[in-house]
Length: 100
Image 1 (cartoon, rainbow, N blue to C red):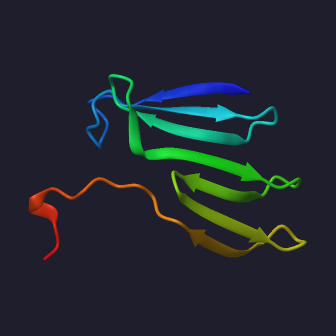
Image 2 (cartoon, rainbow, N blue to C red):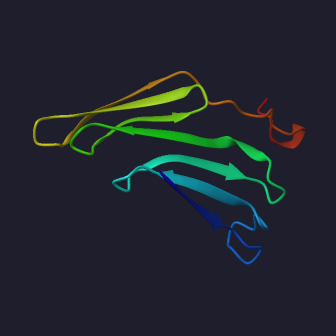
């Protein structure tokens, strides 16, 4: 397995200022994990993804903390359904963004 780091600079349109993502890949180049990090190295709460594939290379599962998405394909490798269970962890909204 290999790991690649992608950095965001302060010049990027999202202005994340040095945050980055570590991607890991399996031996055939499929993404296995993507973990977002703050510029200081701490893990970003909602950017902890895991991926699993079937023998044909189709994405079967994508996880983000407790959220699990499942993908089903037919014999032609066409996506036929997407399921979801659980929830991703999230921080409370700041008072100015809370819905009333």
